[in-house]
Image 1 (cartoon, one colour):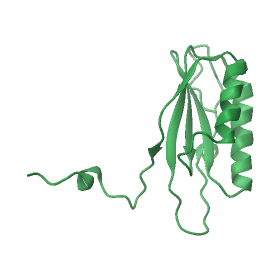
Image 2 (cartoon, helix red, strand yellow):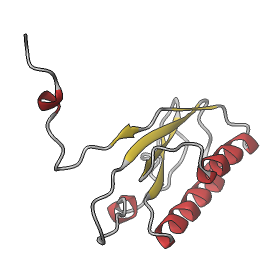
Image 3 (cartoon, one colour):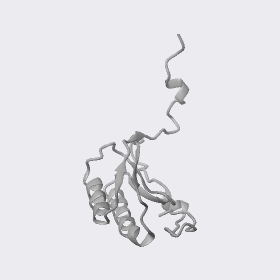
Image 4 (cartoon, helix red, strand yellow):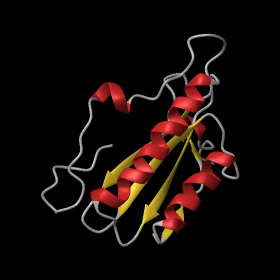
Length: 135
C-alpha cells in the first residue's frame, strides 16, 4: 500500500516498486488491461484501511493463482483515499468488486467508482494517430 509520506496523519505504510508492479502472464498473447478507481471521501486512517489492504492483497494473490490480472493499490491523500485497480477485464460487477464494496460499506466509507478505461501498451498507437484526419 502506498499512502504518501504520512505527514498528513493518515497512512504511513510504504512498499517497494516490485510490490506495485502489475503481473501479467508471460504465456500466451498480451492481455488487454483496464484501469479504474474507487474514491473514498472523507479519507480513512491507516488502521481502517488495513482491512481493505488485506482484502486487496488477498484478491491479488487469488488472481495470480488463477492466471488473471487484478491488482488494487491504496493511495492516501489529505482530502481523499483512492483505490486504483488494474484488471484484465472491464467488468465491474465481479465478485472481487462486490467484496471490496462490502468491505468499504462495513467501514461506513462513502465511495464512488470510475468507469474502466483501457490501459495503453507499447504497441498501441499514439493518441493523435487515433483521431480522424482534418477535413
